[in-house]
Image (tube, rainbow, N blue to C red):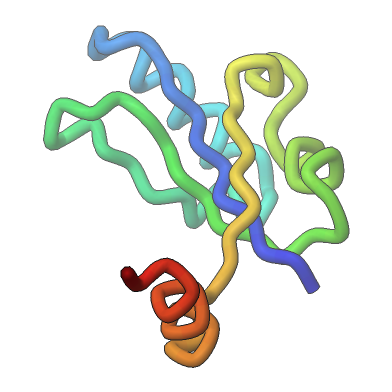
Length: 92
């Protein structure tokens, strides 16, 4: 199943952080209550990694009020053989 990173930035004010975190923690969603936050390090965003069938399904995990701000990135792994193949095609 495809894996996605959901990144949700928010305003860098203490009250804005508290409001977003409150929504996530009170949602009852395992994904939202286990989000990773960067606020304590000055990066005002939450990150969630989920398995979903599509970007739209991943976005649906985000509370409706925040969906338009969410960035959804499809994640992948690389095998060494794949990378070596690319590098060998581009050697001079």
